[in-house]
Length: 79
Image 1 (cartoon, rainbow, N blue to C red):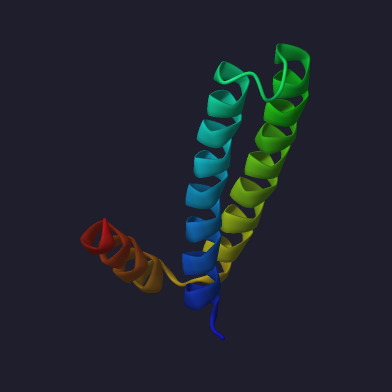
Image 2 (image 1 turned 90 degrees about the vertical axis):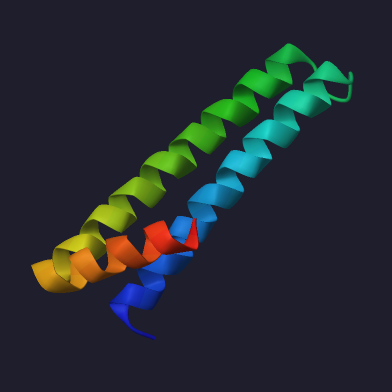
């Protein structure tokens, strides 16, 4: 696959991470995990988010400016 495709998957992974965070808060609200467990897991999701952002930034650096503009406009159309 191309760098553009990989960036698209990283973007989807970031969205999935946000979904997981929502599910963790819900699990805490429903009593499946306590606040200590929630805090530990949210810290892990924050760490993964930082890694995804770093990966996204590194991939964007590999693209030419015109390719990045095209990618960003495509992501906006998909939203």
